[in-house]
Amino acid sequence: MPQVSTKHGFLEYAITDSSSRWRKPTETILFHHGVGIDMDIWIDWLPHLSNNFRCVRFDMRGCGRSSIPPDGQRWSMEEMMSDVLAVADAAGADKFHLIGESIGGTISLYTALNASNRITTVTALSTGHRGNYINQVGSWRNTVEQEGFSAWTTKMMEHRFYAGAVQDDVYQWFSKTQANSNPEVTLALGELLMAQDLSQDLNKLKKPVLLIHPDSSPFLPVSMSAEIHSLLPNSQLMVIPHAKHAIACSHAKEGAEAFLNFIDCYN
Image (tube, rainbow, N blue to C red; front, side, top):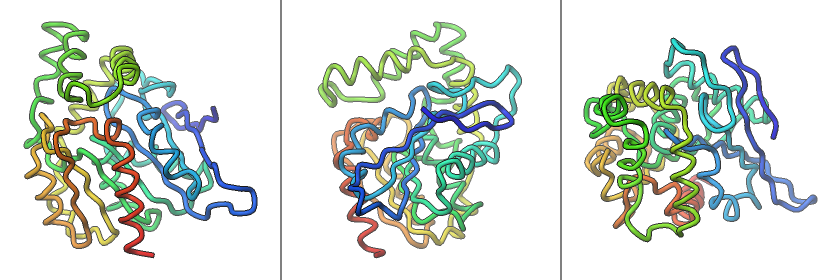
C-alpha cells in the first residue's frame, strides 16, 4: 500500500476505484476510522461507492500499519487534521467528501471547520462534539492500568455490537485488530476526544453534514447527535435502530446508501 510521510512518521493509505476506464469518477471520498481499529472498518462500504467515487482510506496515526508516534507525542486536533490533508494531498484530492466514525467523525467536523475549502460534505457516524458529555471513555486509563488492556478490549467489544450484529468472522477480525492496537495510542486518542468542545463553532460550519447515529451507543446518547444537528445550519440526522457504537462496521450498507441519498440532495 502507498504511504505518505509526515513529520511524525508515515501514514498508510489505500485508493479504491472500481469504475470503468471510460467513466472515471471526478469526486473523492476520504474515510477516517476511530479508536482501536484501522482503515478496513470501511471495507463493506466500497462495493456501494467505489464505482462512482475514488475511495481513499487510511490508517490513523498510531493505528493499523501507520507509524506509532514516540512516547510523549503531542496529540492535537490540528495535527490530526494535518494528517487528513496530507493523505488527501497524496491522493491528489483538492476537494473531497469526508466520512468519519467516532473520533474520526469529530476530526472530520474539526477539519470542515478549519479547512472548509477542501471539504465538499461531511458524514459523521457515532460522533460526539463535547468530550465532557461522552460516557465511559474517561475511565479507559484506569481500566487499562488496573485490569490490563485485554480487559479494556473485552468491554469495548460489548459496547461495539449487539450479539449477531455482524458475522462471526467480522467480529473476530474486529476483536483481534482492537486487541493488537497500541495501548498508549488508544488512551491518548481517548483523552484527546475527551478534551474537545466544538459546540461554540458548529454554527459556522456551512458545509452539508450528515449525522448517522446508533440508538444505543454506550458512549454517545442520541441526544448528543441531536444537539450537533441543532447547532449545524445545514445538516441531516439519521438514527440507526437497535445498534451499538460500531455502526460503520455493522451497518455499512445502510450508511453508504444514506450517504448517496444525502449527496443527491445537493447535486
